[in-house]
Image (cartoon, rainbow, N blue to C red; front, side):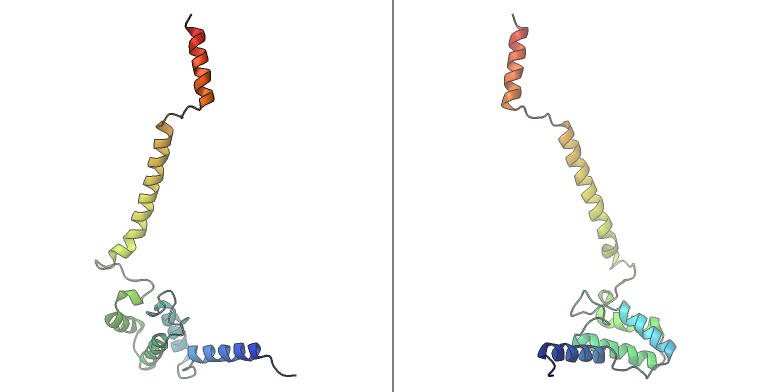
Length: 152
């Protein structure tokens, strides 16, 4: 029985992804490998921008994984590796950028937008409460009848 082409294609894709994500396994100690895994999940793929370099298949992500691997193997600390990457690519490469004067807007903007949204909702609610209800034609007719009855 021949394997179906789609199954063969999926198997080849899985093997390719697995090979791309773990091309250097076996050259680090278990402790270094744990550090490597943590670091590649902290760094953003600059091509994909919404994936870590661990999750991305982009060539740049592969290069960054190799650089992180090589620097860990060379004995550099995690902070040294983060500093190297941010010096080269900026704070955007970190999923959790540090709070500095340059990144303050990134940290403060979500809170300001939430406050602005809450303020807008409250203002609209107050405006709707204070606005008189519009009279329907039936209400207007009923009001005229009541006024006519009152005036002899």
